[in-house]
Image (tube, rainbow, N blue to C red; front, side, top):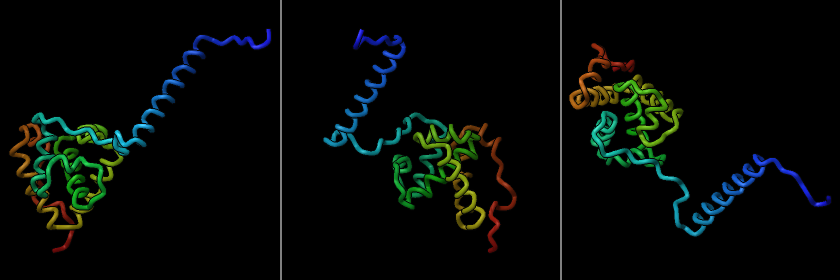
Length: 166
């Protein structure tokens, strides 16, 4: 019986599925070469529904004279990253969302990106009195727009959260 092989049914199905995935990958690469789809996948845009996280995103964008969708673009531009970090920080602090949930509602960012953005924003608040006062004004504005349950979670300290010497 030369040339005859016995394969398990599961092995055959696994091989077919691997082949199907390889073909799908080749099709995607071919489409990129032909210029039919962008190289970088676009971030999932936020829903236009009125949610607390959307209100925060819109308020931060307005504060920095940006459009809300610009904060979700995959860019390293400092004029966009700092406001994006602030939006991440505010969603985390005001709404109490977990890092993965913040990432999901803000356009599918990885949770470590949210952690980094929150850390950078907190450091900047501690070091820069002017920035800290801007954030406090933005928080006060947001507390009027957000549900009352958020206002109960968040409290403004008597002294600023900034440790910079004036």
